[in-house]
Image (cartoon, rainbow, N blue to C red; front, top):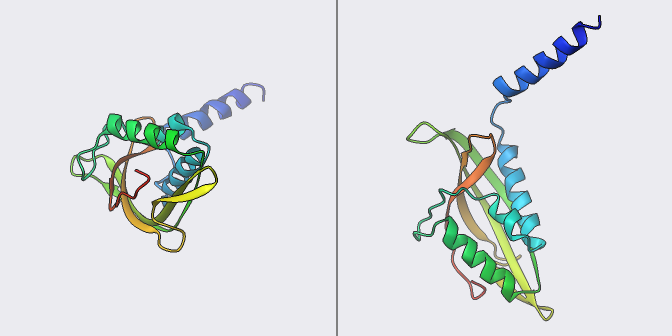
Length: 156
């Protein structure tokens, strides 16, 4: 019996690492929630943790540029608010065979300076509809590799 418990533990660990659970769209929703929560806390590293170093969007922006933009936006405002809804995601493979997810959702982000709210991306009454492409990293987490449909407001 004493030998059986370590064998069960080792087997469970091996199953966890070699047979991960299927891809679940709720994983994509969790990344978006985590990113928005980090933004509300003005946690630059927390926001950027959701972005792939291979990020490249329709405007030609890359990871380094996005990080500079976020740092600039964080310095302009005292606090942030925002939310997303109507998320739909499809998971498949990219042209090069990597796991990829494409999510479409409505989002708004506002900043506040001296308690005056400023719309940064859409508004609560008129959110921005964006499409975000994710790739599954080698370590298993989903990372943002591009964002489409962002119309820059005064806040950016």
